Amino acid sequence: MSAKIRVLGIVPYEGMKPLLSKLAEEYENIDLTILVGDLKKGVEIAQSNFHENYDVIISRGGTAKLLRQSVSLPVIEINTSAYDILRTLKLSGADTKKVAIVGFSAITEQSLFLKEVLPYTMDVYPINSADEALIVLKHLMSSGYHAVLCDMITYTTAQTLGMDAFLITSGMESIRAALETAVQYCRNNSALRDENHFLRFLIRGRAIQTVVFTGDGKLFFSTVSDNDTKILELLHSEIGSVSTNEKRHLLYRQNNMVYSIQAQRFFSGEIEYVAFYFSVSKAPLSGNKCGISYSNYKEVEKEYFESFYSVTNSFAPLKNTIDQVNQSLCPVMIAGEQGTGKEEIAKVIYLRSSLKNQPFIQIDCGLLNDKVWDYLMNHHNSPLCGEGNTIFFKNINTLSQERQKQLWTATADMDICKRNRVMISCISNSQRNFDSNSMVFINQLNLFLITLPPLRNDPSRIDSIANLYLNRSNGNRKKQILGFSPDALQMLRNFSWPYNYTQFSRVMNGLVTTANGSYIDADNVRIALHKELAITPASTKDSVNSLDLSLTLSQINREIAFMVLETQNGNHSKAAKSLGISRTTLWRLINEEK
Image 1 (cartoon, rainbow, N blue to C red):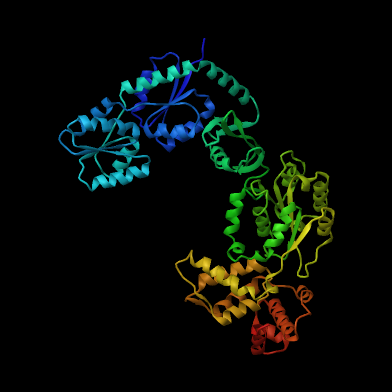
Image 2 (cartoon, rainbow, N blue to C red):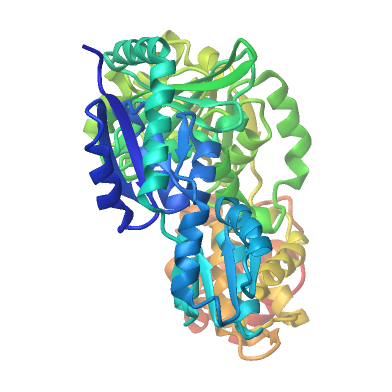
C-alpha cells in the first residue's frame, strides 16, 4: 500500500479552507493540512512546516509565485478561472458602473481577455507587490472608480483605504483542478518521492540538525521544527558568505542556547546548494552576564561603528600595525590604561582580518564566576575547543593568579593559538608596566604587543576628537552645537583624563546635554571637570608615581596642582591651602597652556 500524498494547502483567506477541505475528501490518497497566510506570511508558514515532509504545496496567486521563489517543494497554483472573475464582476455591478481589476498575473491575464469580449467599463492593473497595490489603489480613488475587484492582498489594502472592494474567490472547479494536478504530479514522480522520503528519514535520525538551501536562496531541505524558525532567517542571511570548496564555522547565541554551525557550498550535477549542519547546546548562563559572548561580523561592525572610537577615528595611527599583525594572524596582547579602547581595537583587528567571516568570541575575565570558569576549562562545547574563531580575552589581569596560570597552561597545551586567532587585553599602569602574570602570557605565547597611549599624552588630539564627536551628536539631537570657546577647549586639553577616552566620551555627552547655547563655554567645562575630580579621585601615592619628570618646571607645577586638587575632591580652597598658594594662583596654574 503506497503512502498518502502529503499536501500543504496555504490559502490567502479563511473562506477557502472549508471548500478545499471538502473537495480533498473526494481523494482517499491525500493527507491535507490547510493553513491561512498571504504572501510573506504564506512563505513563513511553508518554511516553518518544512520538516513535516510534505510532497507538494497548493496555493494561489501572488503567494504561489512567492513560494516558488522561496522553497524547493513543487507548488501547484489554484488558477483563477474566467468564471471566477465573471462571478465577481456580476456582484460588483460592472455592467452599469466603472470598475477596475487589480491583482497578480493569475488574475489580470484572464481579466485582459474578458475585457476584450465583455461590454463592461473596466480597467486592468497588474501588480507584483503590496506596495504597488497601494499606489494603484490611491490612483483609482482619485479617478472616480466605483469599485475594485482584486486578490487578497489588494482587498485588504483597499479596505484600509475605505474603498468598495470585491475579492475574486476561487470556485470549486479551480480548486478541484489544483488537487488533480497535485495527485497527478506525485503519481508521475512516485519512485523519486519514495526515495526522497527514505533519505529524509535517515537524516532526521541524526542528532545534528540539517538545513539546505539552493544557491539562489530557496529552502531545499530542513529538519528545523516550527518553534525554531529564527535560525532559518539567520542561515539564509549567511548564504552569500559561504565560499565554494571551504567549510565555514559559525557560532550563534539565542535564548540561552548556543548554535554551533558548519556551512558548506557544493554542486549536485548543475545545481548549487548551501548546506548548514548544526548542534544546539545550553550555555552556562543566560545573556552576556556570564562573561562569554558570541558575535558575527555584522554585529561587531555595528558595535564598533557606533562607538566613540569609530566616530573620532581614534585608531587611525594604528592601521598599518593592525594590517601587519593580520598578515600572519599572530596572537596579540593589547595593553593600556582603563578607557584607552582595548576592546574596540580588538574588534578593529577582527574586522580587518581574514577571519572576519568566522565568529568573534569575547571572554570578559572580570565576569567569570566558578560555574562559567569550569565550563570554559572543561566543557566539550567550550569556545576553547573550537577552531577557526577569533577569541578575545578581555582584561586578563582581573583573573586570580591561579586562574591566569590555568589559562595560559591550557592555551599552550591545547594549541588554542594555532587553531584560533587569540587576542588578550590587560590593564597597565601609567608607566605602561605589566605584572609578572601578564608577562608570562606575553613570553610563553609569543604575543605581539600593542600598547595604547593614554589620552593625556597627545592633548593636541582633543580639538579634533571633540569636534568629531559634536558632528555626530548634532545628527542625533534637535539642539545643534557649533563648537567650543577657546578657553573651554584649553581646559579640556589641560585635564589629565585618568580614564581616557571612556571618560572623555562621558564628559562630552554631559556637555552636549547641558549646553544652553550654540557654543560650549568655559563655565560648562569647568563644572563638568569638577564633577569628574569628585567622582574619580586619585591617591597621592599613585599621582606622585605617575608624575612625568621629563616635563618643564611650569608643566610639573601644573601637574602637581592637579594632583593635589584631585586629592581634595575638586575643592579649590582646600587645594590652594594645601599648596600654600591663593585660589587665584591655583586657577592660573591649572589653566595655563602646556
